[in-house]
Length: 196
Figure 1 (spheres, rainbow, N blue to C red):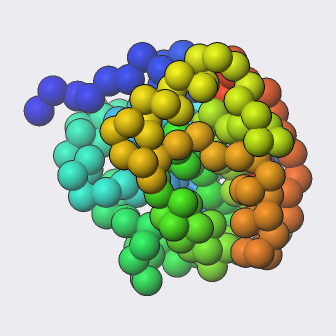
Figure 2: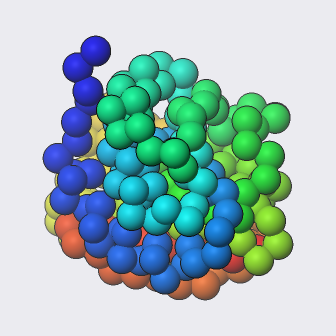
Figure 3: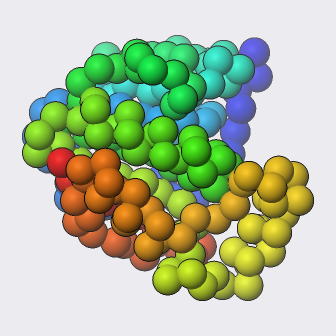
């Protein structure tokens, strides 16, 4: 199979890694939700060898992710495992860390709620959740390009769309996740961090 490839993943992997290095400090399991192509997982597992990086995604994406994992052959890279965030039992039941990139805006809001609830259950006390992507700030788009992107998402599916940071903070609080940090990254994206 031809490996799936994302130019955006290649561009943003180093800035994201820089933030993860500040939070994913101890040995432990990382639960990745929505591994996409698998490029992020390969890069992060290679550069954070103290972590057991475990990737999940929807069933239809697993073959492409697997092609990246097999080529990388990293001992600390696991999966990919099938996960629909709405399912009651997740394939990873305990993790010190959780990570997801560019998923919140392609999920429905109910799926975003399910992701936060599932992360809250899976995270060990003292663990953290890092969520990367485009987010509105206090109800406002942070750039014209994000506004156009949001319009294109909603044209494809009205349940998609760039999420507002204040709604995510409130959701985290309801799921017993404490908001800890907000990093501005290239291309008008951000990385938000919660702790348990």
